[in-house]
Length: 378
Ligand SMILES: C[S@@+](CC[C@H](N)C(=O)[O-])C[C@H]1O[C@@H](n2cnc3c(N)ncnc32)[C@H](O)[C@@H]1O
Image 1 (tube, protein in one colour):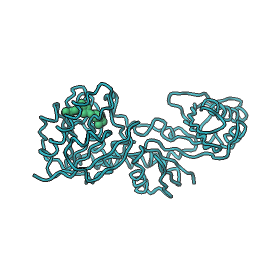
Image 2 (tube, protein in one colour):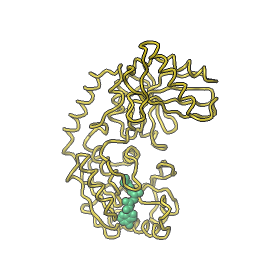
Image 3 (spheres, helix red, strand yellow):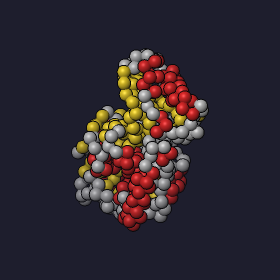
Image 4 (cartoon, protein in one colour):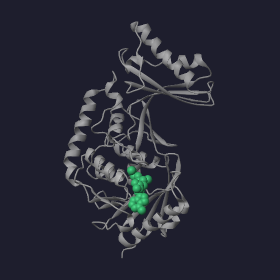
């Protein structure tokens, strides 16, 4: 059975492992920023469709010692590439290189491309084209020291691209990170959820999909659907089942409300909510958190306030906003579990609340904490 490697946001490995075990994946092993598992291909199709916290699913094709160009060419030639594609399809090779015979990825990537094209030329007289955009076969080469691994990537487009976000908010949260953070909370998937600084509403959309049992991969396509050895019958069955589950859960959208003071963010959130099939099911309020009166008492508050990631942010104004958020939680969210993503400890101190749990997570390049606060009932 193949070994699969599933990448996630740093800090969400346990969440991803739990998701994989719930899918029934075999031999799940935690790695840094990833998990691996060993199972039938159908489990990997299900992983693409169902994993909320995953960013990429890759199948290992070959692994071996590589000291020079010829070793790499030989390793790439051991793979039967006709299992994945025909010479009429397209491929792309992406690489990461550390302490290897090559200084950067360009040369080893060319060597792998030559090995693949030579194999097709020998068999058919023709070679496949390389396509940067939407290749049928995305190949990944990892060269670390004297070891090389070749993968094929099942998703094509990363899994966090669910298809509901056409326009980007200026500092959006990655959808898979947002979903993973939600899975770290104690939320029962039914009770009311609030995001008082919601930006493009990623938390709220991911919460709705979680509550309604909607697979995050519905409505998009994956590279593996175009591979020669894909069991399309098994894939169709998984997809149909996911559609049935989404239809059965559609009415279970909990009370969800987002607030943001930026009118552009509210417009983007509105568009994304519509594209996610949630039109009319998420309340949006335009205004400052200082004036936000939640339309219902929340059980869960999740939010990702600005923490000075943009150069033009004024530190004093930021600190004031965090103080206002703390006051909002204290005065208007009594009894809720509140989780705040913070990339600057001095700002979280402005909340004036004591965190009961702290989960380290990486948001893009920034080391963050997902801070939990239990707000006293008033
Ligand atoms: C980092 S972004 C949130 C991104 C969001 N999680 C998403 O996925 O798009 C922070 C948001 O907080 C909003 N914000 C900052 N201070 C605010 C305040 N005092 N009241 C309301 N919204 C505020 C900003 O307008 C911005 O949209």
